[in-house]
Length: 301
Image 1 (cartoon, one colour):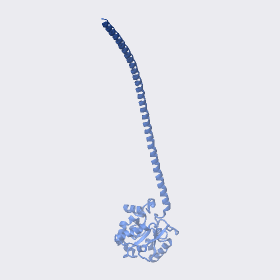
Image 2: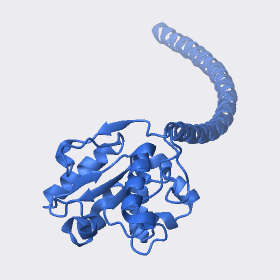
Image 3: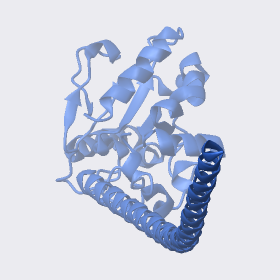
Image 4: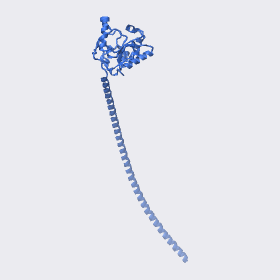
């Protein structure tokens, strides 16, 4: 009986203690729950604030990025504009340099070389080409004679003669540079032989293209000094078809108003002008002098 009572007492005591434990556990659990809920709310609030700050920062970064992009676009446009200016300046500088080079070249080029002389312009007794070169005797009809040509014309002349020879055409030079005094003597001898008729085929001193050092008279081994036969030679035909490619033009073609037809007399005027004359079928002395002068800069190109 007593044992049962003790057991019952102990059971109640245990239940009481257990109840206290449960109550205490529930109280602690409730407190923990409240505390956890509060912390969770604070965490959510903090997270919301952090998210808002992060979003604001993102927006700020996006704005900054957009501003940077605009700045880059503006910088790029400025760079392109500066490059365009630089290109324009370079083009202008290049054009100025070209003009300066052209003027320097013109200043060094004999302005008499493309003038019309036959009964139009006059070369005084003191004029002579700035540089004369001896003609190789192999190109002369009379190898014992001493003939000269303008030094800058010489390579064009030699190339033409060599190419003619390669084509089976034998061209020989019978006359080239003549000074003012040489022309005076020649004209006097012609007048003694032909009288006033000499004026039809021989220029007075100062009016001869030969004084320029850029004119030559051609012949062939078969024709010799009989110029009137030259028109019927293969050499004359070859010159008519090819001489312009080397810068030479026929000074006095048929029906010119200066001298009788001289198929043997050829003058160097430069490849550009000779080609223009050939392609347009225009006679040199019928061209306007101002138009001719434009080719002075390229006469030896």
